[in-house]
Length: 192
Image (cartoon, rainbow, N blue to C red; front, side, top):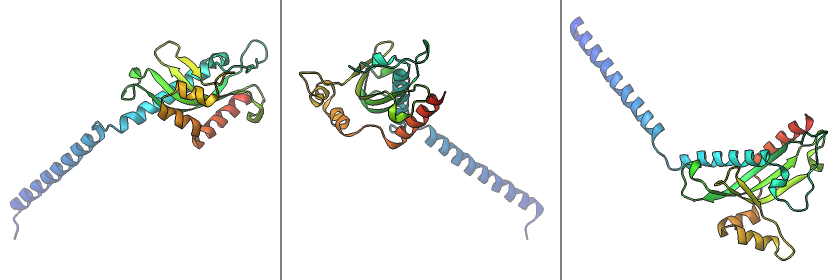
């Protein structure tokens, strides 16, 4: 038979073991959560690059997008209509950068609509194409790939982009979720 004293000792040791197990599980969870996972950082870096690229394009005057031959409409009075952009990042240099401050050049694609009041997306003035964003200047420099009378678009793209990004730029534009977000934000801005 178990005496009261031995039961208390057994019970106390049982609680100690439960506490030890909980402490070990908690410590393990913290270590795993804070572990420097090399795959976690680029996703965060990628999100920072996308956000900065979108913000830069939306705050820039449409003429700064350097699209030749595109007249940009003016809003009523002196107020310019907002520019709403969707972006896709193909890559950046230096490729080994792990912090946004280290990124000097971004290669990507943009599709922007000038959100004139009550003008639906289908008839909005749009600016689109592969671009290079120079992050070493303030504001960042925007260079859009365009054909000239002497150079075809694809040749100009290959001149400006590293080969891997040039190949992507020939095949990919915006993803479905980015396009849906762009359309939603455009519709909201054009109704204002």
